[in-house]
Length: 638
Image (cartoon, rainbow, N blue to C red; front, side, top):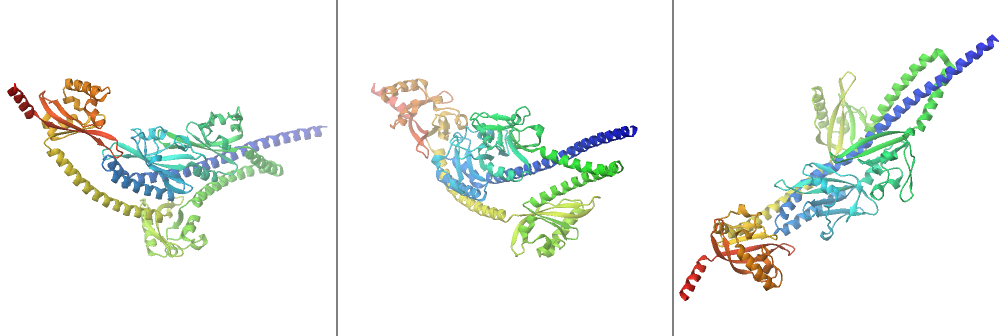
């Protein structure tokens, strides 16, 4: 009986110990796997962020180049001169050609525009890619964009540099384009020569294409979510929720990521399943777009059910060993687990580094100090046509068949030994088939655990196409600059002649804009009235030096003559001109000193390239002597 009791007690203790061991083992394995999966998810998320950022950086670099091309600045100068419509047309044509070439060469970009801040943000040049073909939008279809948020944000005085918009559905004429085309806009402000903001260049890039690349990199059994900084969903596994906030009220991400509710019903009856945090792990990163204005969130989610299964499997494995070896091998088991943990971490680290190297679009080489190749990624194989087993262990000079490579490697090693950095440089390489092409090379040192230099890595990028485009742009710029110089000489001659006529004229010549403000006040006018051009241009109307009594009396005369109400003011001077009638009569000018001067004033209209009245030109002749002679004649008659 006592023996049975002892066996019962021992068995009970064994079972309790086994259960406790199983629970401890399960909890330990679960936490370890959970942490590992969380790290892997975070690493994958960082790769997603870097991919997205690389896409944005590429177009940010492009917009900076496009911002500085000659036609952009030339259009500003041509638009400031209303008589320069021919030059403006030429520069627009040049810019359209450049825009078309850019869209043809960039698959994700589908629209490229030059927009001015004036005229309600009317587009100056618009080139759009439809069905893969870049087409110039006709002048009559150019739109005004002052009502769009990106227009207002770019126009902000404190904004400078490259602007990246929120991702939203593309719109034409204020209506969402069908089919839906999620769009991110990359823009750069364009300044006039006087430093005043004139407008901006903006590239429309298809966010769908970027989303597809991000989705292709999502780890197995994980889900991708993308929201804007308000939490509104841009991409969700349930596609009915993508950009739904542009049409109806829908939950934001924080509401979808809810423990208390697992199903949402939209206005149209669509059911959306939310994410339950108790059954998933989340990795989330915020990607700034334009600093201080907007950003987006990239989120990866993975269910924990798979982690629980892995933890249970690991637990049963551990318990099996515990059951067989029991207490005597507990220490060995813990040591083994510790070793497993270190190996898993090392494996993850190696896998992460290997994935980064192998997925890179650039050729990446590892080179030892003596010049032998130790690493060679897939992109290097594609670029040079040489497989990994053909080059590993070979000298770089033998692989690339040029002595300049050896000199280059020796220089790199010498710089790293001195503790200096090696700046990226451009050189030439040749493929296995002896095809020579341009590359950009950057190098980084590789050191052992003691910090000693054991080699270096080389990252090589094919820049043949970039160099070709750059050379074409240089030739185009040279051609354009020559044309501009020739046209400038012609314009200067014409302007000099006009300026000489205006400055040397004996009569007062005064021009105004359509609103009546003075835009031209020649030296003869300054001499006649005593005002300087600086005092009046853009600040005063001709009413300043007219007798008010004459203006009021003339308003009454014109009202009777033209059969319409003419108010005393600037309309008195131009009403007959606008009616297409001859507009000449005597007036009394009042000089700055108060002296009254009788003049004979002729007023004509000025027209712009669209045949619209853009202002008025007045030519006033001093008839003081004529008026004095007339008065003497009247006295003699009397």
